Image (cartoon, rainbow, N blue to C red):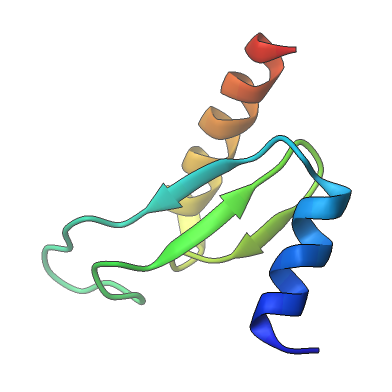
Length: 69
């Protein structure tokens, strides 16, 4: 499946998402500035590098989605 097809399937299954983007990176980081991911209530597409930062971002995004429902 191509990247556009993967995105289309993800958005079809998850109409409500939060887009996350790394704007700046300082020091050692597994991903570069500009890395993006989409967070849905029960799924994610992409990664901003994993680890504690990503888990915190996913939790915050899902809390925002829950407030919107």
